[in-house]
Each structure stands twice: as C-alpha cells, then as structure tokens.
Amino acid sequence: MPVALFIFLALVSIISALGVVVQKSPIHCLLALIMTLVSIGALFIALDAVTVGFLQIIVYVGAIMVLFLFVIWLLNLQAEPVPAAHLGLKFFATIAVAGVAAELFAFMARTKVALGAVTVAAGYGSIDSLAQTLFGQYLMAFETTSILLLVAVIGAVAVARRAAPERIVAPKQETP
Amino acid sequence: MMISYSWLMGLSAAIFTIGVAGVLLRRNILVMFMSIELMLNAVNLAFVTLARRMGSMDGQVIVFFVMTVAAAEAAVGLAIIISIFRNRETVNADELNLMKW
Image (tube, rainbow over all chains, first blue to last red; front, side):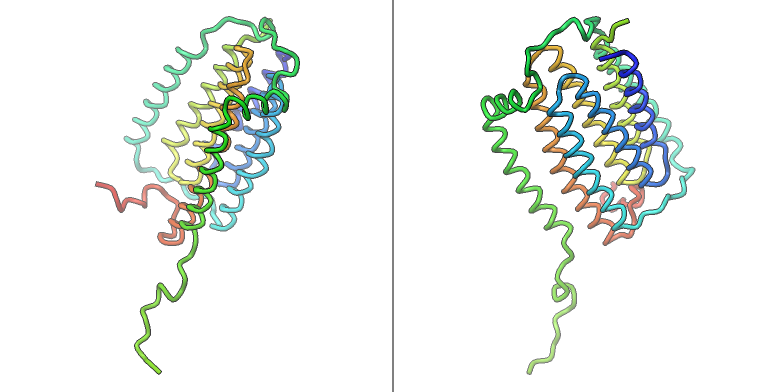
C-alpha cells in the first residue's frame, strides 16, 4: 500500500469519524459514518482482504446504513439543540475517553514491522480462501450465526410491531 | 518510508476512541448507536491488520462474524429505538430515566 494512499484513507476515516460525533443533525452523522465505513473498506482491500472489503461495502453501507437512514426518516428527526447541562458528566466522559485512548495507543501501536515485510500466499483474502476457512474450521459458528439472525429478525419484528388496536382499546361491553 | 502495522493499529485505536467519545458525549440514542458501529469497525480494522500480519485467514473470518452480529444488533436496536420513540416521543437518552435509581 503506498504511503500516500494510507494517509489519505486514514485522514478521510478519522475526519468523518469525528463528523459522526460532532455534527448535530443525525442525517449528517449518518453520512459521515458512511464515509468512514467506505474508507475502512478501501483499507481492507488495500490490506489484501478483498472479499471482506467488498462485504463491508455491501453489508454495512448497503444494508445496515440504509436501515439507519430508514429509521431516521421514519422518526423524522431534526437537529436537536445542544443542552448546556451535564458539564460534570461531560468532564468525566472526557477523562474516560482520554484514558481509553492512552491505553489503546500504549498497547496497540508498538510493532515496528513494515507492511511490505510480510508476504502472504497467493490467493490470500480471495473468496476461495475465505470460504475454505469459513466452511471448514468455522462451519459450526457459521451455522450458529443463522440462528442468531433468525432470532434477531423475530425479536426486531416483535419489539417494533404496533400492538393490534383491539388489544389497546378496552373491551366493549355491549352484547348482541 | 514504509507503512508499518503500528500505523494501522493506531488508526484503529483512534477510530475506536472517537466511537467511545460519541457514546459517552452524545445524548441522541441514534448517534450513540452509530458510534457503536464505529467502534465495531475499528475492531474489524484491527482484525484485518493482524490477519495480514499473521498471514492467516482466521481474522477475516472473525470480521465476517462481527459484521453478522452488527447486523443483528442494528436490527434489534433500531426496533427498540422505534418502540421507544412511539411510546415516549423522544430519542434523548437523558429523558429516558424510568429505570434510573
């Protein structure tokens, strides 16, 4: 991966990630989040994880983000005024964020191994190799995933469904 | 100058930290939810980086599972948000204090 490409993608992802946190309107936050996800997907592809990179674009940007967009439109959310309260809470939250940042950078950014120094086998990250691993070693987990998705869909419908009107209204008294 | 793996891990740490800040500092449930997605993606980036470092496909398979769990989580979470909005007419986390001690 060229250095310029990495710096470009890193800057785009960090700036748009900051955009998710600082912008007021939820729809702008969502657009910034999509920018972040697309640039992370491009990083995946640059890291020889081609299949996962395209899955990132298709699944995240194509499905999950559209779901978010749908919910924002459904709720008709506007930009809320920023309340000035909770300054103490925000103070402690900022300290916690700084602590998390210090911890992560202390433990994660230590290796000096260059990206080009590690070579991978031909076909690394292709659909073929991903499928060999997924349907071989991780077959049981993959099948369990289908149960998870089924339960999630049923749960989502059960939670979001409007209760039938006859259950809300008190039962009528008159009898024929 | 060569890119080292620590740059990518540092980028992952930075995005994760921004996600933590979003969850802690924002009060809109939807934006908090988006920040959780941001953290999930930072972890995915770390997984892909380390899979490349080890030359193994296992990390990428884990990313696949993380995406699946994120999809399930988004479906259930957005359903809960719709349900809350229908009952309380708000998505502000501060106003949802029914179970606050």
